Length: 549
Image (cartoon, rainbow, N blue to C red; front, side, top):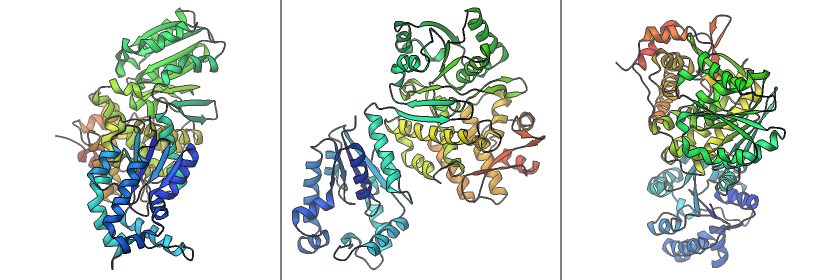
């Protein structure tokens, strides 16, 4: 649990303003180290440097930092160089309750912020920054950043501030703290058909009984269909349903896309209808995207619709398939060709499930996270490039499933998708952007199913970006940035396949309108757009670019 927050980063990145907002939101005390040192010394920091020198100032800084770390429920806004010693990091790592948040901005953005602060300084207020006294301040900033980078990288989470407001950054930090204390982060998806309540919290599954009976007070029986891979280790929280007075029927769903079939659906129907399912009953889908899609469709169509709870256990299903109400099964002609939109009234997202997830499945899920980052600029209220920057700066920590970071990023993805679904529940226009990378990706996946869904989408995103490069819409550096990010998460950017088979599978793709294939393509300004002007030669070139001989 986080008991103190320490904000680090270069001068001018907004630590002081953001720190005040975080402390106010949490009801914690605030120590702005520069302000406190000035108060104790009775003079401004430039005067301390002039009279006593930098070494004296650093000693005062180190002493104050140690004092702050002895307190709890405190937000500490540090000076730019306060954590740039091994001794400082020994102190920061001494107590697991200390959470270090790094603020990051480009040298140019830092210079703009500092210049703006100087222009806005009131008479009598010093805006001079001694460490930046130089003929070329920008070059000085670059040099200091280079020397401090290794220390700044020690942060538990790095948040790119760029042109972000302090309010948005403060809200993110506040949410990170609350997630660490066991407070659920809630997303409300208000669709045209029905609302969906989505809760994110490590350990959220333990509260299922209360949440279920609160939402369906007349429910007397629940139908729990779980992926076989979920295993017996997850029985205790399901057993609590029976201990709470509910009749619990269980069903195992074989893993793999083969279960998303007419035969797999018939098995669920036989189980529920043969067992006497009633309208007040609730189906609970426990597993990844295959289980969620299959059980969701069964719930939507059994007795014309019964209660549904999605409990996703894979990263891919947490950030994507469990949110938004898409349910369905595959057909021999292609993926997800049979289905319905059916919003789950309750979605329980518990990142603790990810601890037992095979590494390949975990990495596959990050493909959808990366997809959301690419399309973010095109989503309602989306911040251009923010999630992409977050993923680049925190990839290693995310792969280690460090919490509350992983919970926060999952929540960011859910909010993004929910905003798109609210604007276009039935995928008539905007929701199509969620298919970025899926047209070619689904073709590769459906060709032989040797790749996991996320792996195929990763390759499909690179192919789509390659078409964008060939059309001159985006620069090759944008494609290369995507490739590096996917590789950072251990995802493939090329695959072995027969181009003709993939083209044939693509021809059956359901994302068509009036017989014309809809493509989600990158746009020059960032984000994506829907296009139909993709030539056969461009598709062939893209397939060749991601083909591994």
